Amino acid sequence: MRLENGLGYLDLTVGSGQEAKNGDKVFAHYAGTLENGTKFDNSYDRGEPFSFVLGGGMVIKGWDLGLLGMKIGGKRKLVISPELGYGSRDIGNGLIPPDSTLYFDVELVDIQTSKGQ
Image (cartoon, rainbow, N blue to C red; front, side):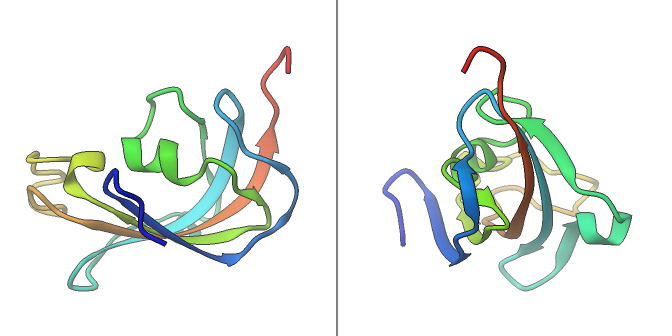
């Protein structure tokens, strides 16, 4: 499925339970690659999932949008345009060149619901 805002995604596994929503702390494993297949990051290599508050602006916009609605155990492919990624910035001394489209395989491991919801 392709969205008009520069984010594409495809659910490989839907998962079960609650859906991730803005304000939740989410824990996800991921592998990130460039269009040519070059790996630039992989949480599996570190042995622990990455966590952040969904919708909190702590990550690139494509992640805040791309993990919305995922369920625990869900696996999703994300295609993130430069506008929702790092834009014209050079990240990591050329590791991610300017204006790169980013590809992620994401697995949602856990959700901590935000307080008051």
